[in-house]
Length: 545
Image (cartoon, rainbow, N blue to C red; front, side, top):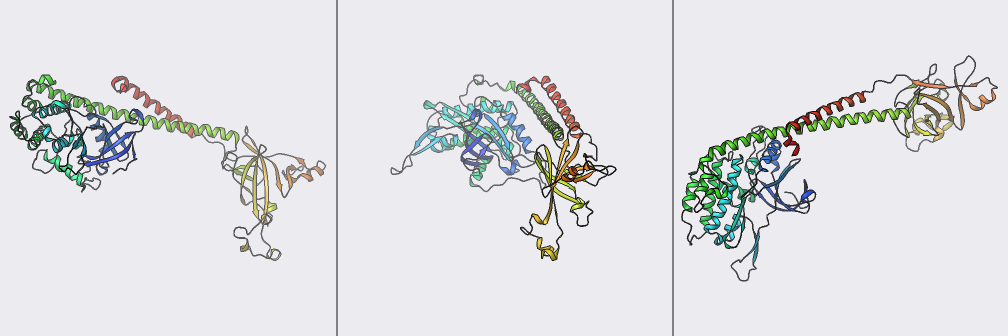
């Protein structure tokens, strides 16, 4: 049961109404679109049924047919929707006429009810049901069923609670059948029935049991104990049972009831082959052409027309499914293509401003190496430990650090723990482990400043700073370039000259697969769009829908 305030599609639940044999009923209010602020009636199918394999496709196909039903005696389906397991239908809210009834006790307050259904009319105001009222109700119901059967939709659950009533003064009355074909949908049988993946709905809810009991009392008993698929003769039988239900409730003291008992008996015993025959036999109905119905002579043409409509709807549904599938493929391939192209463009802009992330840069004749991690203003870095900071004087070990942008350069900050002299420090090595156990004096800390050449894709070491002293690239005649203290270069008298230490990528740039993949997906998306355009040109009615 959904609680008040729950959002389902474009609607918000106001009140729970009841649980019937075909699902749960709610009073909801539209919160967007054309239905904003409008009260609607929502029918929600039981979760156990809707989660069966294949139900969603079956539900959509049936709702497409139900939504086409319009006309006299039909309470139309406005819309339907699916969100996760929730499969629901939306109808206009029928308020009904507010009436007062006495409880038979002068001290008891007058009770107000909303007269909405034939069930309410028979329970609270059976004296208002006259032969004329019954005839008007039956004519409306026959007109609705005649139209629905003509397009291949069987109601399958004609009963008093599914007949909406608008009773006016003077015996005039209008009636509408609601919840067409919901029995067929709620009795959906998955192709996995009998396997572990199939779940059959069973409820011990008293309202559900009462609704199911009433439904069965207005259906034919085929001897199998199963509802089976709804048939046209089942609706004819239900109309006869409906009249018998009314006859048992009214007093029948006035004239005009003659013939109704016989009509009900014949309908229940399937003496009428179809709705047209049943309506022709209604006492006092007169000429069917007044109601837009034809006689038995046109029945064959009606059946053929209904079959044509059914086939046309199946074809239309298949086309809609194909269009939905192609539209999904177009959208997903277009999305992937755009994402890949954006990745390609971002990488090009990034590599124009930054070194290739986690790519090794080295210089010939030296053991120094650098790698910069991905980042816009800062990131992780990796380098080689200089020999000056190695206890053995060799260097060459990997050392991790971080980089940041500073004055147009990349500053790489590194640190290396100094080996502890136990006699001098008075501490064992394990005493340096833990938060707050070490300080900056326990580390070699240095910063390398690198300049990135965007044209040649190289890194140039500009300087190294350690304990306030600056080291610059320099070389002596006939020797390999290395770092010298800035003071020494100035005082060398030209013996040590400034030079460049340029670090190039060890691996050349590979092919940009993101661009190729992106172009491939975009081409696929365009091909799907071309298919959609061709289908809509061949079927212009789909494009309008």
